[in-house]
View 1 (cartoon, rainbow, N blue to C red):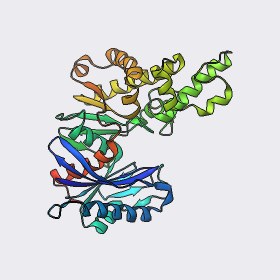
View 2: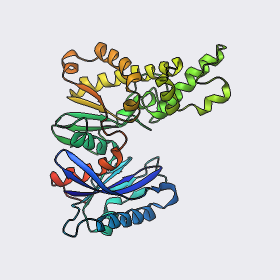
View 3: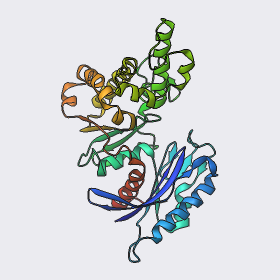
View 4: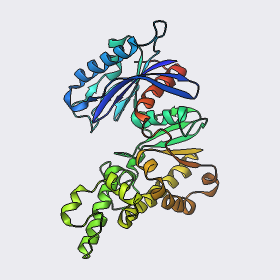
Length: 329
């Protein structure tokens, strides 16, 4: 099965063509990514449609892609294929992305938020293969979830299912999803940066100069990548920061396990890269907080597709909708 994919992100957008065969997927052609801010929404979609046509032309003459999957950060109206003003995509207001790409290529197209697309990718090709009840957590720039329940993607009554980053874990704490102390506030790149600055400031005000942040001037440069690299190298302050993120992750996972009783929870991005620093604290909380019977059947795993998930997620959207015979836009 040949499929087309489009990954729309706040920094860059890219189109690809892939071949899916059972539990394997191969990206055959990937156009050079385009910088999102250099195009209007209409201009970007025209350019991506051109990239898809170029990639499709490289297929054998007797082969044809069966549809286009589009992965994009929300909010979206996935059923109508419309992008609805995502915060990381200024100007993308009520953009009928699926309709435009379908009209320009002659292929059916489906739009899916990036967390749901990631869940489909892990379910079809990654750490969630063969699992009928799966929760996928992004743990990247933000924290969102994609839900596979009973072997189907679950989007909720209005497509808002999985916005777990909005759950409040503490009365106070880093701000994420517009809420202090939220799941996203503790378990996202921006949240970890906020934790790092708060913890480093405490050290500096106590008269200490930690290697991670030796002076006030270094506070602004703290980000999740720097914390992760320092923690992997053994920096005690960085490890303390990630332990706190892990503790809060454990609380959030306990809620998910008690509420949804999934077989697997797959977590991407920062968790996958910093697994050894984050997971021990999360596991300790899980063992204390989650219902034993539900916890016993749930496996928490790092993403198996962390660095390539964008292309594969978009292709997975197309495959899912083709195989479930859902109507395109």
